[in-house]
Image (cartoon, rainbow, N blue to C red; front, side, top):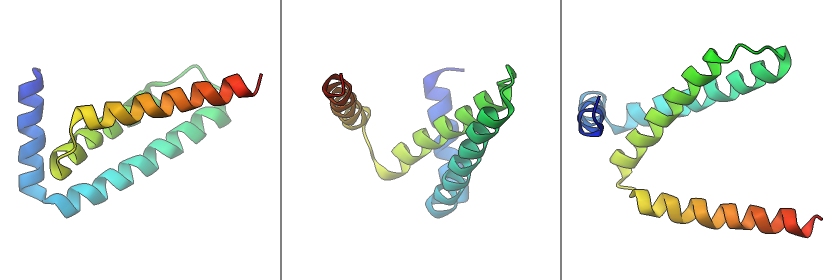
Length: 95
């Protein structure tokens, strides 16, 4: 599926269900992702498809949130870069 096709479906979902409902679903999906991480840590199994599925749900939600609230990729990447550099500095200071 192309990026354009995905974007179209995500926009249709927002139009169909509304921003408020989609925002609530995104919060719920984040909660399910947290539970999947906890389950993975508790069970110590090599089986990870449940974790990958929850990651996919959260990634979709991030795209929905970007569309709903007009957040640009560059804005996100600026924060990703700044926070990654901050983490690198913290690790360096701990040595």
